[in-house]
Length: 104
Image 1 (tube, rainbow, N blue to C red):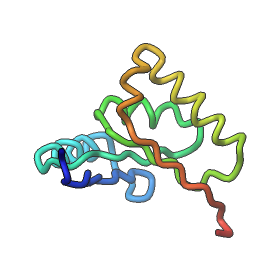
Image 2: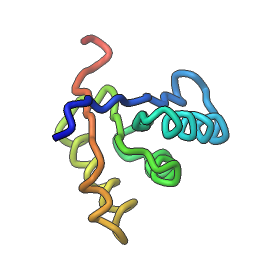
Image 3: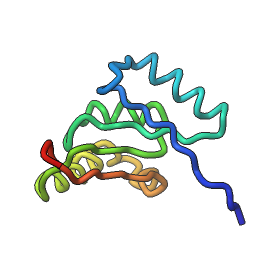
């Protein structure tokens, strides 16, 4: 039984203005340190962010500031679109959904 907690390195390219090559370096660094990579997704239906994160082999996805049930539906719709060929791969991922708004 593994009692070591999973440690996630959060790649927040929207906040830090990271490029794909920056994220690739973070991904390589995470793997070399036995961390897992978590990619921040820019919006509820950001297909480009999800596809890029999938290409970086992210183990987790974070969706910040989700304000409605409609946005949650859009998240799962986008995940289905990106992982339609390999839905089993999605089962191994963690999904963090931050339900909040600008007002708190």
